[in-house]
Image 1 (tube, one colour):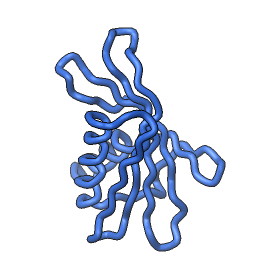
Image 2 (cartoon, rainbow, N blue to C red):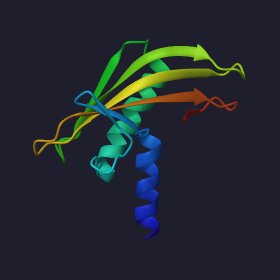
Image 3 (cartoon, rainbow, N blue to C red):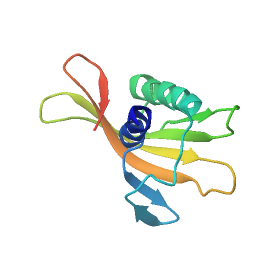
Length: 119
């Protein structure tokens, strides 16, 4: 039960619940299932994008073990009301087996310790 709860928490935090696919908005991530090995690829690309990329850059990931893939596209960078840097992004997750790519929109901000935190 604790493992499932941790996985569900990761999905919610890692893939922000605003989903756009086929021109319609979704508010559930239940149809997107990432394996533990996918999370390693997602997190590396995500934090590389936040730390080293410019707006409109697209960083892709692919997990040869599962065939799952995706991309992070940085949309904008700004200072929030607390004077901390934030970045808006779009995140694509594509799972084989005929699934339609899922797009999520989200935001991450640096905390006072300089660590990016998904909002």
